[in-house]
Image (cartoon, rainbow, N blue to C red; front, side, top):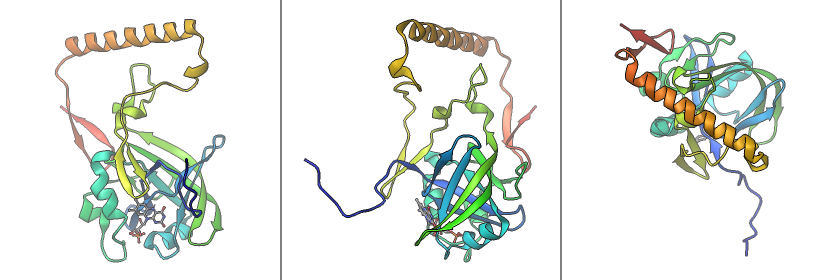
Length: 228
Ligand SMILES: Cc1cc2nc3c(=O)[nH]c(=O)nc-3n(C[C@H](O)[C@H](O)[C@H](O)COP(=O)(O)O)c2cc1C
Protein backbone atom coordinates (compact mmCIF):
# COMPACT_ATOMS: atom_id res chain seq x y z
CA UNK A 1 0.00 0.00 0.00
CA UNK A 2 1.22 3.51 -0.86
CA UNK A 3 0.63 6.76 1.01
CA UNK A 4 -0.78 9.55 -1.15
CA UNK A 5 0.92 12.88 -0.39
CA UNK A 6 0.59 16.52 -1.37
CA UNK A 7 2.62 17.50 -4.45
CA UNK A 8 6.32 18.01 -3.74
CA UNK A 9 9.81 17.75 -5.19
CA UNK A 10 10.09 14.01 -4.48
CA UNK A 11 12.48 13.09 -7.29
CA UNK A 12 15.69 11.60 -5.94
CA UNK A 13 18.58 10.83 -5.99
CA UNK A 14 19.95 14.11 -7.31
CA UNK A 15 23.52 15.33 -7.42
CA UNK A 16 24.51 18.10 -5.02
CA UNK A 17 26.77 20.12 -7.29
CA UNK A 18 28.82 23.25 -6.77
CA UNK A 19 27.87 25.96 -9.24
CA UNK A 20 30.51 28.60 -9.86
CA UNK A 21 30.02 31.93 -11.57
CA UNK A 22 31.82 35.22 -12.23
CA UNK A 23 35.48 35.10 -13.20
CA UNK A 24 38.83 34.08 -11.70
CA UNK A 25 39.03 37.28 -9.60
CA UNK A 26 35.40 37.81 -8.59
CA UNK A 27 33.78 34.42 -8.24
CA UNK A 28 30.67 32.94 -6.69
CA UNK A 29 30.06 29.40 -5.53
CA UNK A 30 26.83 27.83 -4.31
CA UNK A 31 25.43 24.34 -3.86
CA UNK A 32 22.58 23.30 -6.12
CA UNK A 33 20.52 20.16 -6.28
CA UNK A 34 17.95 21.46 -8.75
CA UNK A 35 20.01 20.49 -11.77
CA UNK A 36 19.98 17.84 -14.48
CA UNK A 37 20.42 16.96 -18.14
CA UNK A 38 17.72 17.99 -20.62
CA UNK A 39 19.21 17.22 -24.05
CA UNK A 40 21.96 15.07 -25.56
CA UNK A 41 22.77 16.83 -28.81
CA UNK A 42 23.68 19.58 -28.17
CA UNK A 43 24.45 18.53 -24.58
CA UNK A 44 22.25 20.69 -22.38
CA UNK A 45 21.71 21.13 -18.68
CA UNK A 46 19.93 23.50 -16.31
CA UNK A 47 20.31 24.88 -12.85
CA UNK A 48 17.42 26.48 -10.96
CA UNK A 49 18.40 29.30 -8.63
CA UNK A 50 16.35 31.48 -6.30
CA UNK A 51 16.70 35.19 -7.17
CA UNK A 52 17.76 36.03 -3.58
CA UNK A 53 21.02 34.05 -3.92
CA UNK A 54 24.22 36.06 -4.35
CA UNK A 55 25.15 33.80 -7.28
CA UNK A 56 21.90 34.55 -9.10
CA UNK A 57 22.64 38.11 -10.27
CA UNK A 58 26.17 37.24 -11.37
CA UNK A 59 25.10 34.17 -13.37
CA UNK A 60 22.19 36.06 -14.92
CA UNK A 61 24.45 38.97 -15.90
CA UNK A 62 27.34 36.86 -17.20
CA UNK A 63 25.22 34.18 -18.89
CA UNK A 64 27.63 31.40 -17.98
CA UNK A 65 28.57 29.12 -15.12
CA UNK A 66 30.41 25.91 -14.29
CA UNK A 67 28.83 22.82 -12.75
CA UNK A 68 31.39 21.10 -10.53
CA UNK A 69 30.55 17.50 -9.56
CA UNK A 70 31.19 16.71 -5.91
CA UNK A 71 32.47 13.66 -4.03
CA UNK A 72 31.28 12.07 -0.79
CA UNK A 73 34.36 13.28 1.06
CA UNK A 74 33.41 16.86 0.17
CA UNK A 75 29.92 16.57 1.75
CA UNK A 76 30.56 18.97 4.64
CA UNK A 77 31.99 21.65 2.34
CA UNK A 78 29.09 21.15 -0.08
CA UNK A 79 26.66 21.67 2.78
CA UNK A 80 28.52 24.79 3.93
CA UNK A 81 28.48 26.30 0.42
CA UNK A 82 24.73 25.69 0.49
CA UNK A 83 24.13 27.34 3.88
CA UNK A 84 26.32 30.43 3.84
CA UNK A 85 26.02 33.19 1.25
CA UNK A 86 28.85 34.73 -0.70
CA UNK A 87 27.35 38.07 0.33
CA UNK A 88 28.85 37.44 3.77
CA UNK A 89 31.98 35.42 3.10
CA UNK A 90 34.48 34.37 0.45
CA UNK A 91 33.56 30.68 0.37
CA UNK A 92 36.51 29.79 -1.88
CA UNK A 93 38.89 31.03 0.77
CA UNK A 94 36.95 29.58 3.70
CA UNK A 95 36.65 26.12 2.13
CA UNK A 96 40.05 26.09 0.40
CA UNK A 97 38.52 25.58 -3.03
CA UNK A 98 41.26 25.94 -5.64
CA UNK A 99 40.16 27.87 -8.74
CA UNK A 100 41.15 26.68 -12.19
CA UNK A 101 40.45 28.61 -15.38
CA UNK A 102 38.07 27.03 -17.85
CA UNK A 103 38.72 26.91 -21.58
CA UNK A 104 35.56 28.59 -22.82
CA UNK A 105 33.76 30.39 -19.99
CA UNK A 106 35.19 32.91 -17.54
CA UNK A 107 33.67 31.26 -14.44
CA UNK A 108 36.30 29.29 -12.49
CA UNK A 109 36.32 25.52 -12.10
CA UNK A 110 36.98 23.95 -8.71
CA UNK A 111 40.16 21.84 -8.82
CA UNK A 112 39.03 19.47 -6.05
CA UNK A 113 35.96 18.41 -8.06
CA UNK A 114 36.61 15.40 -10.33
CA UNK A 115 34.44 16.68 -13.18
CA UNK A 116 33.66 20.24 -14.33
CA UNK A 117 31.10 21.22 -16.95
CA UNK A 118 31.52 24.61 -18.59
CA UNK A 119 28.05 25.95 -19.40
CA UNK A 120 26.69 28.81 -21.45
CA UNK A 121 23.14 30.02 -20.70
CA UNK A 122 20.71 29.77 -23.63
CA UNK A 123 17.44 30.62 -21.89
CA UNK A 124 16.26 32.04 -18.58
CA UNK A 125 12.86 30.95 -17.31
CA UNK A 126 11.22 32.38 -14.22
CA UNK A 127 9.24 29.53 -12.74
CA UNK A 128 8.09 30.78 -9.34
CA UNK A 129 10.37 30.21 -6.37
CA UNK A 130 13.31 29.53 -8.71
CA UNK A 131 14.60 30.77 -12.03
CA UNK A 132 15.81 28.10 -14.40
CA UNK A 133 19.01 28.73 -16.34
CA UNK A 134 18.91 26.45 -19.34
CA UNK A 135 22.41 26.07 -20.72
CA UNK A 136 24.57 24.33 -23.27
CA UNK A 137 27.51 22.32 -21.96
CA UNK A 138 30.38 23.75 -24.00
CA UNK A 139 33.32 21.85 -22.47
CA UNK A 140 33.86 18.99 -20.01
CA UNK A 141 36.93 18.41 -17.83
CA UNK A 142 37.54 15.15 -16.00
CA UNK A 143 40.31 13.96 -13.72
CA UNK A 144 42.92 11.75 -15.44
CA UNK A 145 42.49 9.18 -12.68
CA UNK A 146 38.97 8.40 -13.91
CA UNK A 147 40.08 6.97 -17.26
CA UNK A 148 40.77 3.29 -17.87
CA UNK A 149 43.37 1.72 -20.17
CA UNK A 150 40.98 2.14 -23.12
CA UNK A 151 40.51 5.87 -22.39
CA UNK A 152 36.96 5.22 -21.23
CA UNK A 153 35.78 7.44 -18.42
CA UNK A 154 34.71 5.44 -15.35
CA UNK A 155 32.68 7.88 -13.27
CA UNK A 156 31.89 5.20 -10.71
CA UNK A 157 35.52 5.55 -9.57
CA UNK A 158 34.95 9.17 -8.53
CA UNK A 159 33.03 8.47 -5.31
CA UNK A 160 30.31 10.94 -6.24
CA UNK A 161 27.91 12.48 -3.75
CA UNK A 162 24.14 12.04 -3.95
CA UNK A 163 21.47 14.17 -2.32
CA UNK A 164 18.31 12.38 -1.21
CA UNK A 165 15.52 14.41 0.38
CA UNK A 166 17.70 16.46 2.71
CA UNK A 167 20.43 13.82 3.20
CA UNK A 168 23.89 13.37 1.68
CA UNK A 169 24.80 9.85 0.62
CA UNK A 170 27.90 8.32 -0.98
CA UNK A 171 27.31 6.58 -4.29
CA UNK A 172 28.64 3.02 -4.27
CA UNK A 173 31.24 1.80 -6.72
CA UNK A 174 29.71 -1.64 -7.37
CA UNK A 175 28.22 -1.58 -10.85
CA UNK A 176 24.99 -3.55 -11.24
CA UNK A 177 25.30 -3.51 -15.01
CA UNK A 178 26.03 -1.23 -17.91
CA UNK A 179 23.68 0.46 -20.37
CA UNK A 180 21.85 -2.18 -22.40
CA UNK A 181 22.92 -5.17 -20.29
CA UNK A 182 19.34 -6.35 -19.87
CA UNK A 183 19.02 -6.95 -23.61
CA UNK A 184 22.60 -8.01 -24.38
CA UNK A 185 23.12 -11.36 -26.16
CA UNK A 186 24.97 -14.00 -24.03
CA UNK A 187 27.71 -14.18 -26.68
CA UNK A 188 28.37 -10.42 -26.39
CA UNK A 189 28.24 -10.64 -22.58
CA UNK A 190 30.94 -13.35 -22.63
CA UNK A 191 33.09 -11.35 -25.03
CA UNK A 192 32.82 -8.23 -22.85
CA UNK A 193 33.65 -10.16 -19.67
CA UNK A 194 36.73 -11.66 -21.36
CA UNK A 195 37.83 -8.19 -22.52
CA UNK A 196 37.51 -6.72 -19.07
CA UNK A 197 39.41 -9.68 -17.50
CA UNK A 198 42.19 -9.16 -20.05
CA UNK A 199 42.34 -5.46 -19.27
CA UNK A 200 42.57 -5.88 -15.51
CA UNK A 201 45.31 -8.50 -16.01
CA UNK A 202 47.24 -6.08 -18.22
CA UNK A 203 46.79 -3.36 -15.62
CA UNK A 204 48.10 -5.63 -12.84
CA UNK A 205 51.14 -6.52 -14.94
CA UNK A 206 51.94 -2.91 -15.80
CA UNK A 207 51.56 -1.97 -12.13
CA UNK A 208 54.26 -4.48 -11.16
CA UNK A 209 56.64 -3.50 -13.93
CA UNK A 210 56.02 0.27 -13.83
CA UNK A 211 58.74 2.55 -12.41
CA UNK A 212 58.07 4.33 -9.10
CA UNK A 213 54.95 6.51 -9.35
CA UNK A 214 55.44 10.25 -9.67
CA UNK A 215 54.04 12.41 -6.92
CA UNK A 216 51.10 14.60 -7.94
CA UNK A 217 50.54 18.10 -6.64
CA UNK A 218 47.93 20.78 -7.08
CA UNK A 219 48.92 23.92 -8.90
CA UNK A 220 46.88 27.03 -9.44
CA UNK A 221 46.68 26.49 -13.20
CA UNK A 222 46.13 22.86 -14.06
CA UNK A 223 44.48 20.13 -12.03
CA UNK A 224 47.21 17.64 -11.18
CA UNK A 225 50.77 18.12 -12.31
CA UNK A 226 53.48 15.53 -11.94
CA UNK A 227 56.38 16.49 -9.71
CA UNK A 228 59.62 14.69 -10.50
C1 LIG B 1 22.12 20.38 -0.75
C2 LIG B 1 21.70 21.77 -1.13
C3 LIG B 1 21.10 22.00 -2.35
C4 LIG B 1 20.70 23.29 -2.73
N1 LIG B 1 20.13 23.48 -3.95
C5 LIG B 1 19.78 24.73 -4.33
C6 LIG B 1 19.24 24.95 -5.64
O1 LIG B 1 19.10 24.04 -6.44
N2 LIG B 1 18.88 26.22 -5.96
C7 LIG B 1 19.03 27.27 -5.09
O2 LIG B 1 18.69 28.41 -5.44
N3 LIG B 1 19.58 27.09 -3.86
C8 LIG B 1 19.97 25.85 -3.48
N4 LIG B 1 20.54 25.65 -2.24
C9 LIG B 1 20.77 26.80 -1.37
C10 LIG B 1 21.99 27.66 -1.77
O3 LIG B 1 23.11 26.85 -2.07
C11 LIG B 1 22.35 28.60 -0.61
O4 LIG B 1 21.30 29.51 -0.41
C12 LIG B 1 23.67 29.32 -0.80
O5 LIG B 1 24.05 29.90 0.41
C13 LIG B 1 23.63 30.39 -1.88
O6 LIG B 1 24.90 30.92 -1.98
P1 LIG B 1 25.16 32.40 -2.57
O7 LIG B 1 24.23 33.35 -1.84
O8 LIG B 1 26.61 32.64 -2.27
O9 LIG B 1 24.87 32.34 -4.02
C14 LIG B 1 20.93 24.37 -1.85
C15 LIG B 1 21.55 24.14 -0.61
C16 LIG B 1 21.93 22.86 -0.26
C17 LIG B 1 22.62 22.63 1.05
